[in-house]
Image 1 (cartoon, helix red, strand yellow):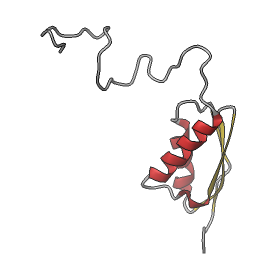
Image 2: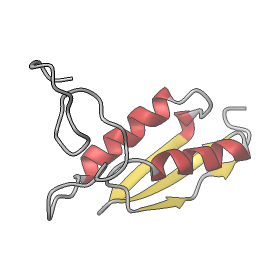
Image 3: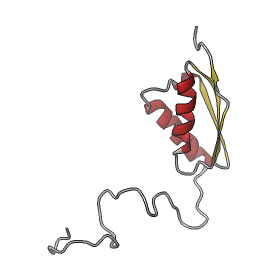
Length: 105
């Protein structure tokens, strides 16, 4: 609701959280996230994930393509890491080279 008591139509811009969809995730023409920004976002999301142990994961980014190297202890972690990275804006491709191994033993 606007301050003057009128409701805002779905086509009008409004403040506050907006649902994903429509134009979500699009940037201006020619906009590309930097590889360093993407790499930092990958690190943050891996570190905050409740299931993935990222302590043996190496992340490389080149022109929006993310390569995951290293090892995880479970196959499900390998695929969860790939899925997590695919959802990051600016990531165009994920190369998952993670191995499943007994890490740290």
